[in-house]
Image (tube, rainbow, N blue to C red; front, top):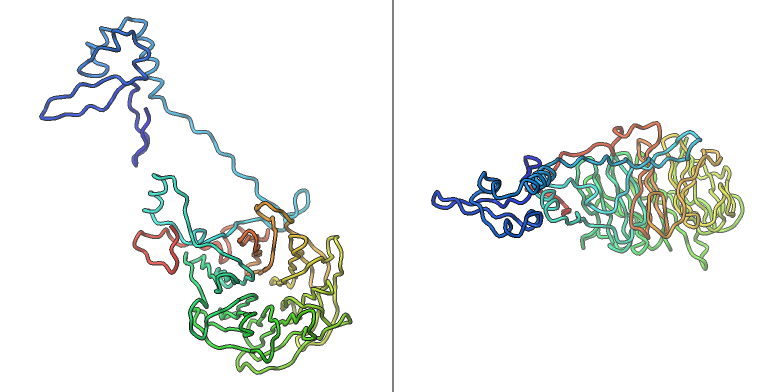
Length: 431
């Protein structure tokens, strides 16, 4: 028999039970059923003071002794380890084209971020239980700052934060005070780590500092009819809020506020189908040279403006082919100015150059959860290192993709905390 302990693998001969001692006298060892089945009936009924003793071996005929030895040695032989094949990396685009992105990981809950304690790992090893964490109910938007992943949850009414480098998770906006959220949707972060959250029910933009403390609100019922998303420039000077309006509303516009004072500065666009007009705008991204890229959902295109709101161009049209749109939702820009547009109907995100040329698409629609498979995709973000974060509401997950030029051990998300001790405190526990 084989026993596994902390020191490694120990072997006990087949057919032997543990021998207990009491008051200096040994109790009788008895062969177990598996060994006895190889013996004659007379031998099975006998007892011996010690398993494998000279007296016991004399009672065994020579052929049975040989067979018993074979079984004994077989039971003590080491079991060879079967090599486990590593899964093939998921590449985009697939070979033979040059790789642009690797699928890296998926985050479902706090257990994917908070290191497991040694006590918890040992308990799971013994009991075989799965590790549990606090998951997402209905994630929508996502933004990232130095390895901290902010995800709005419209069902749980707060922003879930996965702080990967520090191995912790916490919530923002889940209190009953002035910073409490009702239905957070789009969100963004400036270069200092301040968080801006669009709340469609409260009709306000909530601002929190880098520690998650509530600072102030922007906008209000006067300014928003159906607030959909918020985008802030790196300096935190200008805040762009997209109002999707509605089918019966003419308020399809982008409102611009001073990020420091909250003063309304201007509006960009109006309802329509012409150049610089919108029909159900969804989101906005700031790209190269401060250009503004607005997802115009009802017109199936991306409309481009300069920093001051002057119309420049648009790209995209309705269709089922790559480079076209069926149900465009959120948009993000990478450090090079490329645009990433989520399409809920296609179940993917498409990558365009700053001029609107299609470069690549990643993902496909599926009813079964898997990496790069989506049923109801929504938010998207690109961090400082070029990693892409894609949210799916149906599968309640965030898929992470790493650009090919970035090594796995590079970037903010590659930083890992040390394993936690059993007494270490956490904002949200993972078991």
